[in-house]
View 1: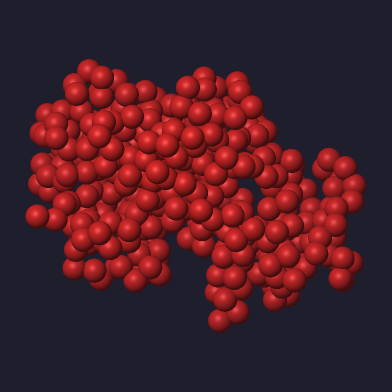
View 2: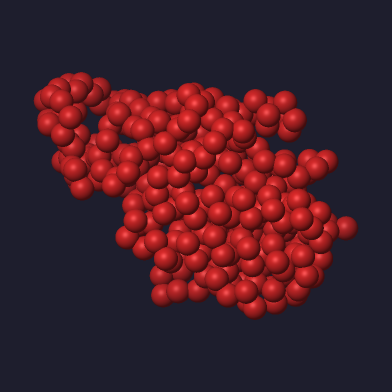
Length: 341
């Protein structure tokens, strides 16, 4: 009998890729989304899974415990992947209460539903490298102390620990994937990688002159989302529930990601100036295509993140397989094609 998986946040980057992955494995997928005036299934349409017969789309408000319980009771999934979140760090400073309600209480309601309805349901909580924040070790693994630096990270830390608590208190198969940055052509435009690749395409076609960024020196461990959703699934197939870091084990500055992205569009960038006066110049044309805008600085910056995926490599045989150069190429080529049509 084929398994049933429930995915919250089905309309997001990870939700869409995970749904595609699970459908290929012959799962029945219950895709949950929150109804709003702006609900958009474009990612599911882009991946050509929107009309799949094994995909059932369900309106769900994860901040409503009765709604969560009724959906879990109705569909009785074998696996639940909680990917729904208010995941934009900048917005979390402006909307800390909404961020906390979604990111902290949503997972709690699912865990409580599993405890009450069926303890055999396996639960995956999408934790985040942002929980490490002001890093306590040069590279971060499952045992590195957390130091969140945003309402988003703090809300995710509660969800992380309540998942562990339910695992240890009630014997539920509740696991956490601590994912470092993972990108794709389906990334939201509010995230820096997508902002960069989209701007590259627009600058290439003369639709935009300048890309404005914040801290160019911030370093992130960037991987490809398609690699990471496979890791989520592998975490729930393990013999016992645990926490796993999914990362590439390499990090790079925002500045250098931008260089890679522009290079894909045949533009070589050189930098001049310092701090907020630094500019990136297209060597071929002499145009200033990158400038700093202080409004993009965070109130509390996370300067560097570098994941250690050794545990996932060894125990799950999971590994990030896409280089940053290849990732930048995939994203820019998608945006060039989208803008050019």
